[in-house]
Image (cartoon, rainbow, N blue to C red; front, top):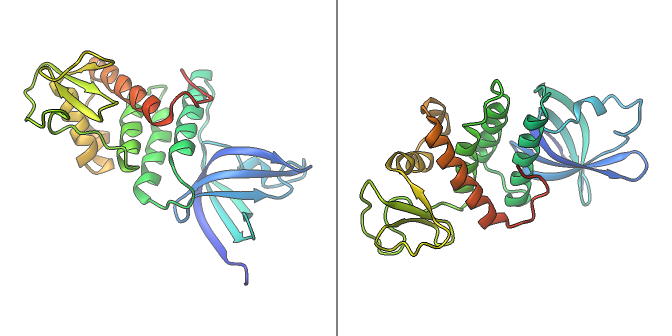
Length: 239
């Protein structure tokens, strides 16, 4: 079967050394979803591709189909982010690791691609990270890990504005009458509204939501609990 040429932008999630001079790249691409590709000779000092194969940047790739892996033939940086700060780098590697662990191979989804890009932009937004939790929760929701935020996950009754809790193990919000007090966190009325918006709104609309410090803290807690429930203790990077 003839090899097929494919051009697509993508983000390198991780790199693994292979052989004497090659790398295996895990990439989330716009056109193919998550793939593995070999970058032949990319570890050689003379390689012109090497400088374009940095994690966390948006890169225009060209591939040909191989027997087991895609073969990368062209890589040119489209959007470069300057990750100077150590905390920023840790946020980046955590974000990429989350994506790598929850997304299956060849699972093309343009919404997920856009969420990944928004997350990268948030990490690089003048040292602020408050919106990254929004995109993390959007990533889980888009990937099939949607929380129940409309009704009590136990009794199925409508939620009042106060005294509600998030129970990640049960998959959503629990009202005060059904809260058993086991590994739950309080969720405010504003927090519930935002969780609903994350599930219902276009990803671009989420950029216009105003966040205060208390809401940021709530979102971070919910995102972290959901991360542990979905991924467990397998993360290499954590804050």
